[in-house]
Image (tube, rainbow, N blue to C red; front, side, top):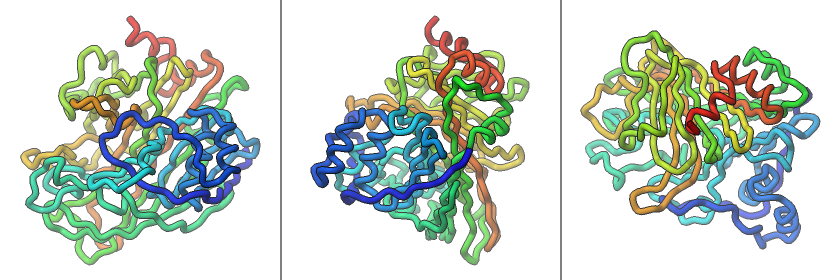
Length: 421
């Protein structure tokens, strides 16, 4: 499959988001350009074309990676922190797989986090703990004091290169952690569209004529650009890929895990214990309901984690696969908002289902599949790399089932039944 990229022009300047808003709905077309208004009016909300037209108004450097037939497309934004905003397996008319938080662009800036959405974004961790990057030294780990570092929240990244298949971006950062250490680093990120032949090779599957697909790979790196080594005393950052997808009443996250390993299978109380009717375990598979109606997060510890997870939306008939690097010998950072837990006792991947807060407001709905790197114990000049890839499939259900069975170990029909029994 031949791949090329397109750079799309800006229509209007971007703005930011207020936290804890109600469900973000597709906005009316902008009045800044009659040409763009007509274009957006011709697109269906929820389609890739609609989101592409909306994002064109916010970013003059928006980049679209695109297959030669125009079916597989991926939107990348250097301006918005090198995010992959969304993708499609069927061009402009196809379903937009990523969640875009339209209200985030309305402003003003939020003091804690500006959640634009995005099918894949790169954050740095840990969020909490004694080496947190989100709390100033000595502050209480409460929402009032929580702040996402600007380089991964509001600041643009540099566009370093773009060719027929990929785009490369970077950002220099100077961050202070909760322990008081100054961390000078350079983050780089390459996003590449994966063609059909490479999808089949990556996942060791066959793609029939009845299946449409889109996939992309991110290669994320951080380098210690300072003069002090990062170790267990100073603390060390980690990379954190978060994928925000569209939920449905028939969507289920599937996480294979090492069934023979000792210890707990999952941490299930990040935001209070996940209700028993929303999570199930069966022969090395964890199922988590992803309907966007109940807020909950889980994590898989390094001893149990595998390098793949996924989801199946039985209503939209969309199979999603996520693959990522895992280091069995690595030390993973605890990201909880507390300082009384061992700092290197964290999970190696996470999943999140959005839902209403106590006051009834909600950012989404969306759901997330996340991967993290181990702590980056780096000497000056050294680099750690973390790879994370996303694959979407639609079309013939029997063919999707064969892919799910091969990669996740369970058919889509079996996934569909888990929470419908």
